[in-house]
Length: 265
Length: 336
Image (cartoon, rainbow over all chains, first blue to last red; front, side, top):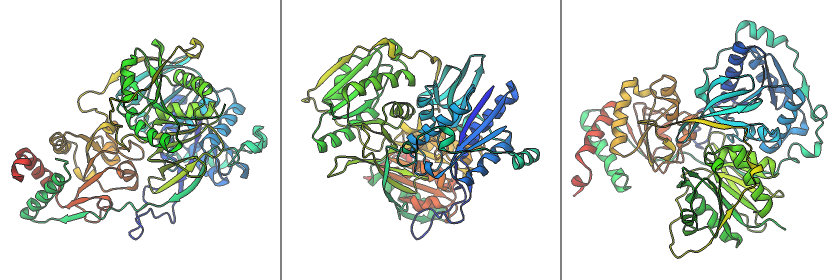
């Protein structure tokens, strides 16, 4: 079975601290990584390949440096990587990004399943996975938490919704966006790293995808960011330090009073 | 025909309209009033009576497009998308808002592609630009560290999903009147490829933490799985539910549906109590829009205190145990 996984390179934020002065995130020296939620898709794809045979292709739209994310995915066990890059793609919103990734997937052709992370940790929209499915008219399962059964022409999955878990049966090919619960991502192996280092990684631009440049990037995006605010997240609340038993009793009393005034108890 | 009017996408489950549908009406009324246009709700499901749909009118809709069909009983994105796309093409609304729920966040991007619309995810503020009448959509991004305002200058409709609980449900006005338009759908719109074959409802502790008014969340500081009992007790006293940081979930102390943060859920409760949660950027992204935040942590330098309205630095086991004891005793009696 051929599985295609669109991934995104995002800034690594797990060790980022807040700036005391401005109350915003300190982003200096921040590294770029594979979107953490995409790792669950990659792991699921590799697991399926190991079980049923076939291959996994990772694709990413981004700057030339996103090649690193693709090589990392190959080091984990993906077979091929394709980078979609060019200045014509700059400024794409989720609509335009879905269109380009859908075109790339169509060009690759001959696939059984597309797996995507539920959303990226930077943009946090979760719109590109469903968008690709819509462009390709593929059946879609979002928030997929478990792969139950893979049959010759269908796949049965469990998805996490507000009220519980539901089980969907989708014909293949289908697109699944996955949540953390679906898998535990493996680390790259030494052999994988070696392979990733020397692997030929094609770069596709608009020309290869047969897409008119006027429909790409900012020009092809319905939405425009008109303003960016950096809100102070600090609230400057009352912080009570405690030590001995009496101070704890006093602090809890103060907390209960705080909740009572706010009508929360 | 030009695009006109504001639509909200109501949600129903088993014939019951969900509260989030009324929150959308609060948003929708404001937008429709500013634009001086009509507000309509789209309600898709099975066996929803026009009498039940009246509730949307009592809470602000001028018109309800009610679509009933046995195959629309469950949310299947392909079916709902086809139905909505058909309605959009027929009636051409200028703005469509849906809830940023698992259904809304699946349906809206699927439809936006089909109708060539701009779509903004998980907005917390919606407004109308004075001169142009464009929808201004504000949303947190990059873990809530920036607030981006987005508009769709040329494409119509303008579409957005709205963060649940980021506004209050619209109140009932029994005097309001409106029109219920029952839509007989073309069966060709039913896609039929995907079938729902099973459903396992949340039981016991597996509640939807996004619906709760009070979330008591535990982190690494709880040290052991068993210590979550303390939080369960506290949550019970406050009529709330238990949430967790990624650290706690990764240690298997509590299941994934309880996880708050970037790789878990985003919650906006009235009260969020973080116990032994350090306050990593990823966690803050999932809870910092809560109305009131309380932090209890041993480490005075923990980032969670920066977003807290009230914090206690100290031994969380002692503090929570005492708080539980205190809440059992009753708050009101003591206040007299």
